[in-house]
Length: 197
Image (cartoon, rainbow, N blue to C red; front, side, top):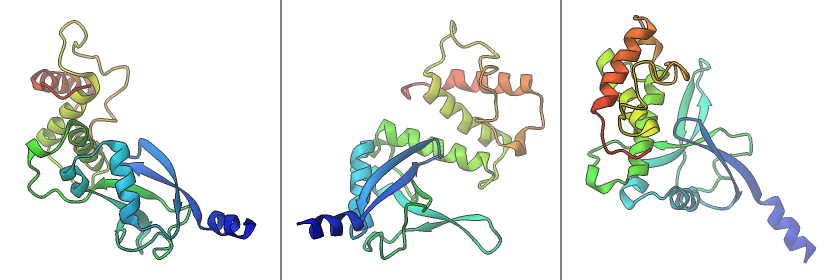
């Protein structure tokens, strides 16, 4: 009996996975002989993803390329964690892989929030260089998700002073002073409706 317990424990692996923008980290105990597909189903269930959302998001390991830059190595869903040399030190992410023809009526609010957060994260890291207008659009959606619909009693120009602008705008578009950005984001946030807090 102890041989069976030892064998099971040797095949267990505690892995951590970041969800979308590296602000949420979840740990799971998995069997190294489990397929990535089985693990994906577990994450999708815990996050409450719809069938469509389940197809949009995928698991990757972030590894360094030959120049020391991070790149995504998408895991093969038919293979096991052991087959792909995943260890407890592997840097795993669960994020949007496919952005082809997303039908808004097929994804739920949680998935919509995850998509907006990923775009903001990628824009902030300059993976997707974007115009000032696009950066403000993306940031305004995230502000609406975080702070809810505009409320004239709660939201006045400058309400972002407490948390700053860095979490919302990439450095490539910060050629203006803080007051300019506060006003721009404030006015755009006023136009966003319906994405829950």
